[in-house]
Length: 54
Image (tube, rainbow, N blue to C red; front, side):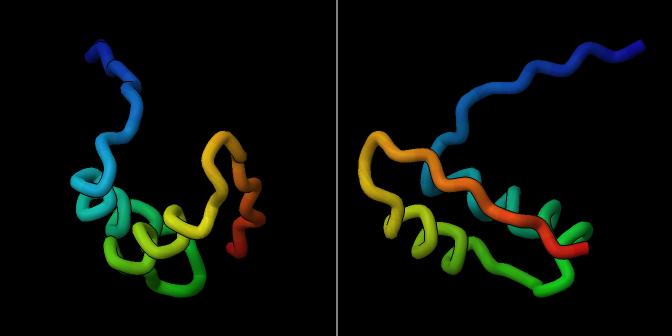
């Protein structure tokens, strides 16, 4: 069985890889640019909880 390691995101580089993964499950498509813009809106030190639409 393969081993997987979950690491912290390397922003903004990982947004390019994350967008297609999210597009497999989100009802509305997203882009790396949009993910970066949304991330930039979160105040430092705050975690944003997002509701997922299926």
